[in-house]
Length: 262
Image (spheres, rainbow, N blue to C red):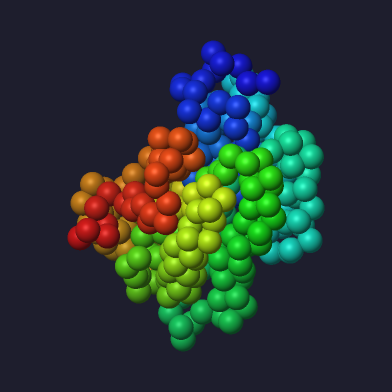
């Protein structure tokens, strides 16, 4: 059971939320934020030690979380994982398809295997996880909320990430199509498009460029409000997960410090 004294609010009290890629970065921040709002959180990730550490942190703070190991590149892993979550909690109300992968490189440089890997994790895994979650949400009769993580690069573009831009652009229209398909089931489907957030992903990218400071300055200048924080994305995801957004579906929510508007 969730300790109500731990909660900042009660917006997700009594609900079960899945966060893929919940072992670090935006996923970790969102898993913690969902738990603070009263949800029982299933953290799905390939990284066992980090994922378990996030679950333990949530539980030690009075929340309710459990780690589920899953390789999102393998359909059998995904199917087994969702079945295990359903067996553990008996329901699924929120799915945050947060897991994503960015490998920089122009089309002349980017390996075909890396292109395929980004599409497998960034879009195909979202389709597969949703495929197994939707029937469980429908079974409950109350609908649910599915949130797909896209990116500012999914609605604009980046000279450094054509593969990432293409896969995240696919997430945008996948979101709209799912929203139309599952409105009769009362399942809302929306996407969050983060701007630059100082996480492990950004650090990994900066380590691949020749002039780190130049690229960092470019990215900073491209965001009128500067870089955001992981909790900014977590708060946006919480809004879409909660009943506060009960009339919102098919939305592509930019949380990017003004990047797309620029």
